[in-house]
Length: 223
Image (cartoon, one colour):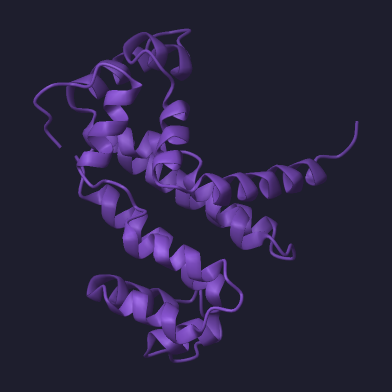
């Protein structure tokens, strides 16, 4: 996306992304998260939230019938059935993934953006597969999916600044973190943290990250 004036600091980058309605976590996604965190929430209410968004409804049904989410091939034709068959958490995963993909692919068609998106989805899938027998596997999926959301958001609106950053990335001995600090004045990981706060996902993601780190530590053999 072409921007007239490049942001000069972290606050301006956060403002730009939020003003452009870039966030995956719009009102629909936030309501879905709220329902999935409430064990007493009725299925019909969650279904109604999704059904208010025609595009999201279509994407959820498509993914609900995919081999990844529905390996037994059970035909699912309604959102309510999706929730019953897949569970609240799986439907939440689908909604977050759909919102993430839809938001990002509308940005500038940059190779780096595609790389970041592919990395996030691959990492999330692998993390959940690793934690398949863990009760917090769905939260771990979300944590892995969102850990680099600032990086992905940045490349949607980076324009000439992104080109400068990529050039610096390619210099011998230059780390990405140093390059980001030199060009932007901050690290993109800081942008991720700020966006998570802006989208009011701090508690959810902190809990998810804690479970992810716990799982990773458990999988590292003692030396």
